[in-house]
Length: 217
Image 1 (tube, helix red, strand yellow):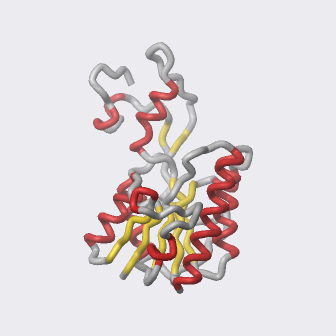
Image 2: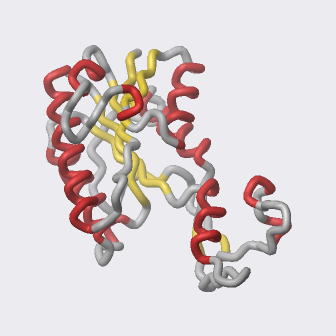
């Protein structure tokens, strides 16, 4: 089965491509690196030709309010139009847990607009909402570090591994997660069963890959 992965050269996309290929499918990574531009539409029709499923894991390069909204609205419009022309049977999109409850953020307003565009389309669709990835925890800690200290609020959070998110997307794309469906905002399926942990985990609980020599985290 031909499955096109929009954003297929990024963290989640590259893992999903590898998983789909191992499962015997014919995945195609569609991204600027492979000559596909979902904003201008360049190469999009050619990439989607003959695709039974399209999985969109792309993300806005600029998280500014206006730029993010422009990206997600334009990309959803162009991808859905190309899918309609190609006769694609299932649109799968990666979104974020809590998108509908975080509307004070311009980024999440843009993600909700993307979800709404997907739901309004005629193409059967599934939205998978994921939480923050474990792989980004080091980057988050780095951006919060001041004079060697990482101040973190005592809140609950629920990170998950990019491999697990890619596996959940593969199950949906391959049809092992039930019939394609449009999932209402606020009821989109989570990638993993709910579980939370405190922020600022102790060193012995932190994934080894996130600990650098000399790190005090």
